[in-house]
Image 1 (cartoon, helix red, strand yellow):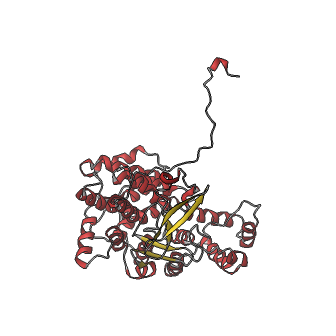
Image 2 (spheres, rainbow, N blue to C red):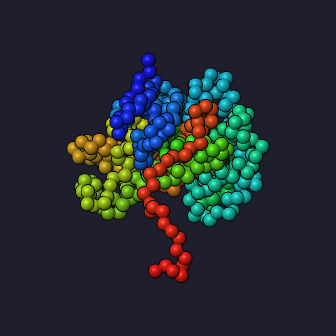
Image 3 (tube, rainbow, N blue to C red):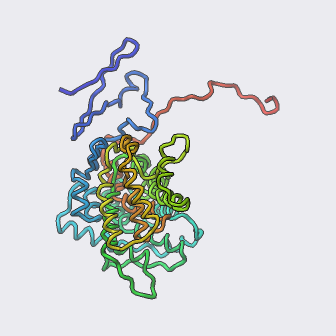
Length: 429
């Protein structure tokens, strides 16, 4: 027997179905509420509203749990690779050896971008933000592959997925090369997915370039940890745009733009900017911790706390160890990183932060690692987008196949003026 809840209003009683997820989470199905009652619900920011059913990612913010397709993030981080995780998210299962080999082969052989597309970089200023370039170029892919953009055609979907996974690192690396005036480096099919990106970012035609395996593994891990995170702002944006049957390129480009916002993907950049501020002020950690506690100061410590996690972010646990390993193995000496370590120690032992559960989050540690790997600050959000690409694709693909999907159309409560009569301009006072 299905479970229901009851809503009683103005003497009338309404039954509301209760939906139970596979992990036991409960939801009130209000999809027929307006038709039955004439009322809608109001939920600013959709913080209590489920927009879809999804089998991709499960997270429990109270218990600090994150799983992709049922697999704990801790296991994937230890044993998997980013491309394998991408396959898992998009297709629902870990690939067999043969499936993984084919997936890697196809992705590897789609990493080049059209030569005409490369010329579009000339239209951007040297100081254009890499996220502006990334979103523009991904959107522009729809102008180069018009023959395969039908979202309801499985073959069109497949080739577009390969192209997005393969070409995004190339597009991203070229945006960096554009900013520093260096020549674009073609992809190398002999390199791994992550090594290829590193090579396109940092090598030059005049000399050989060594790819440190410590750097390669650290970057691969970061991409895994950012691969999906349920119905966040950018994933919801991809689904909303895709619900109109917009092609996958423009749908994903909308996710890139949503991620660009400092309240979403820009947090790790804000961490480094905060560390710079502390350093330039003399490195007095206590002074800034006290400012963060003072509600009237307007200052907040970036990279602490999380909208969903009320416990330690499980990704932060993994990435903290990775940060320590990278800094040790690369023998990095950077005053900003020293400040970050000291700030972390203070926050983890201070009653104020412990009581409010303001633990260092994934953005705090990812910024530290990116800086240690010589990734420029303006590229931090681009790195986030690289990792999130398979998640966006998986969310878009699930939405397209879901028979319950309707074009996104939120309601509103109107709070403007009541009906007014038009007054001609000469008669207005």
